[in-house]
Image (cartoon, rainbow, N blue to C red; front, side):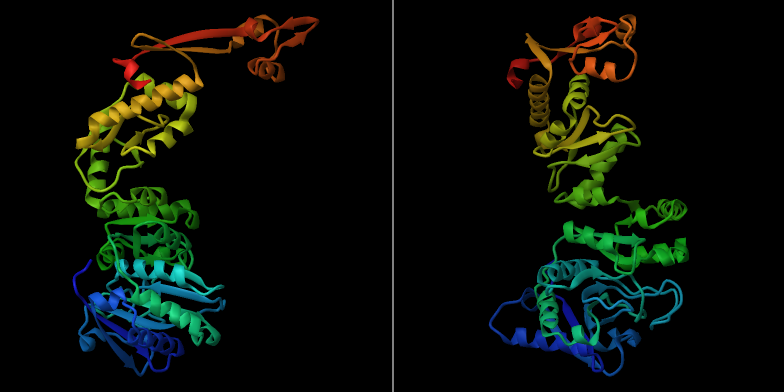
Length: 441
């Protein structure tokens, strides 16, 4: 991330917002404060006479590794806004560029600037991505737009201009997970939320209204232009048919599809390691899903087996406590079908023996707290008392509220007869063999 780059900052002479941002950039750079963008990269300013959306091939003139267009944003629903996006057209070219053409994106930089905008935005301003929707498109250099919207009042607002300028100059990108997005409104609400709370960094995003324009070739170009390693679908904004169509195209193209929860869970796990974890999970239990808890960084993932009966009984009795406990451990758990937690876990090779012990300890403690459990040598003995429907029927208890009262430990009366809970209960005993059980107490 620290490789020195040539960064071109381009504004239009007919754009008040662009001039506002440019003037604040220059003022800030003339001050005493150190700014990451200026400290690590070479900055140049360029002003063009016409509108930025028509500046195809401008990268041939500015000689840069990254272009940041500073501009205004207009909307039929004028709301104060600070936005970032990449350029392109999925269909016609109504606002510059060429039809069906996508410019190279800079998801890493959009992610960094978007997050800075969220911190610095003046009160009342919305911060978001915008979907891909205008030119220029004929560019070979990665670029992004940073904009102030949506009326002349906001375009000239010095607080907005300074916020954008500081957000650009403070950009110090860290490792991201580059994504392409499908579905949502013009302001990409779900994609924005993901980027602000994770390493998920979007390049090209196609809104719901244009989802029908996506075909396998355009999808491939979205991925290439975004340097994307995966995709995200805002399923709530699409019909089932639309979602399934996009998912089939992603599968055919070999592009990994991630849910919002999966993107958030990756957290500090290195991307290549994450892929190794997924591959190992598929080997352990084909078709399973993974949930990452405290596993972070990079390493060699290995399977860790815990006593199946111990996991099953712990999840039955105190699932939330068990999952919360796993959050404190460097572990991934697997689920498949109706089995919410499989007994094989994943961790890094150097922590496998410790992890098996920690999970066993967590289970034993939860069961001793939550169950009528006793220790018998190397066995954890679970005694469960429950309502026996057959016994209840033999005592003349009809299904319904009386069943519930008995199950809750209350006696009931039927035709003058008092029936106590113990009369309709059955007791089961399960013994779980745990070698060296005393170590886990």
